[in-house]
Length: 256
Length: 256
Image (cartoon, rainbow over all chains, first blue to last red; front, side, top):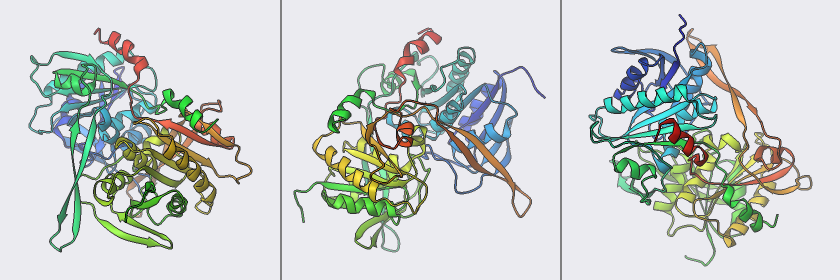
């Protein structure tokens, strides 16, 4: 059955059985026809991985009111495979989330949530990544789902230029304490790495990643700062990595 | 034993037993003290993954004249763990490669080679990713190793600003047909995705990624074009993903 409603592809990186994707899919149903295609298990910190050395499989999934396609791959795999082999036509929107844990600044590099939206964007589709700034799985995604709906609705009628997606982060606050939307830029935050060295039951060393996140900005237009101040941050992101400001300097270094 | 020589950390994504990292480590020995820390197996297309849900282990590795540390992780893990737990001091240079296959344009998103250099850069260390534009493992890395040495030497005496790394791609040509160095920007190339649907011996469907790479630029300053024309491309890359040109437009969409 085809309708005139927008076709919306929903994915994530926390896995198809996570509460965040359920809340997001339900919210998107109010805007259009929804297809869910997401990893069959937790895929956090997979970054922008693609599965090329082994086959992918699609398994039907159902949870309460949500039907979906569980895929044994990464978030990027799910979006690419869904668009190529599940959907009957190109979707009008790709939306990924709702992630538990904020995806701001340098964390975008490691984010499966953002990588799903990136694949949508690379295929020329308006795309959104949405995250809740809380690692507490008990924190309700309803408020973030409401913002997802508001932002998705705007994007369906105001297309972004090809090559840009919206990265949205919602603070873990009640509706009346959220101060509103803020258009932000990627903060200059950083990780102070630490690997804990431990000894396994067989006397062998192993190392476990840990780290401390340091916010170096103080302007309210930086994504991390805006969220900490109670705003929903919306950062337009693109993937031209060139540091244009440095081209002349590099030419000088190499005498070109 | 400490020396006054530069300390150079060498990593890759093709795995510690690949010919590319061997050629690179040997070339770097002419510039300083070299420590090799690389994945214990092939890690192509892992993107910028981090291993956070399981422990990492370090195993001593030796191949001909090269000693190194094989790690059961991704390229990003290797650089982070080496700097935090293997090296006695912060290295003067992180160099990743020599990858078999070019890492240009949008492929940087999926590139483990670039992600290793990115981790060096994020920790404030001059960093280089270097790739040979050939998937043929028989293609010799000696010429690319020569360029790695030339470029690393320049970078050791001409520091880049923090937050920028050099992404280098060498065409698979003989020394006398390579036209020289070209400072480039990230091309606007794209993948036309295709998933081949197959049936396994048990009658179940599976899907395998395939795709066609399309170069949309024609200016010689675009990385893909420069390489195809016979230049070694050097692109300064950074990871502020913000599309600053779009901030006003997005503010208009949301009436902020």
